[in-house]
Length: 180
Image (tube, rainbow, N blue to C red; front, side, top):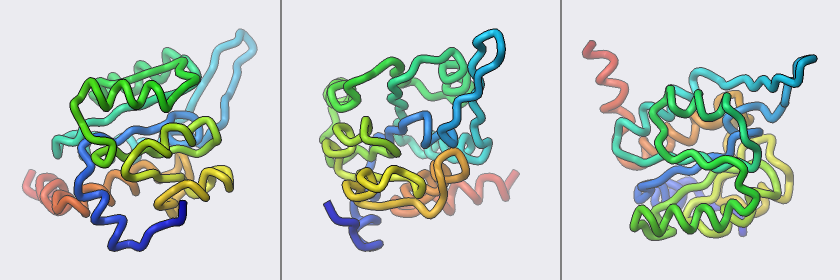
């Protein structure tokens, strides 16, 4: 797959009804910090989280699909209001197809954001495949678009704002803050 032009990206993004994100390396910078007692820590970028909230407010559905399982992920996604959270998913493509079917969507109405080879089966099944800037090179090869920012450092916000911009909803979201 070759990356598409900005105009083609906006054409695809205009029809997105579901945005799906990997966690480690996309919503985080990919590092796992382990404490002495075996506790696992992850750092989520607050502006990425707010981008997800703004995109949810436009009516777009959001899901996360991750191969790892963590209470931290469940808590963070719940705090953001994200309803579709799938952890421990080794076959992300199958989980994604099941969700698309459950929501009654067409694959072309779905965007998937990934960073590593485990994301490729899902990325190949959607209308808009996105890789974060620091994704594995092979993942970038299969992406329609690569973000300017890295995973866990603004890439998710960039994706959310690009989708809202393509759908003519970004200005309304920003104006809602200006009106308060």
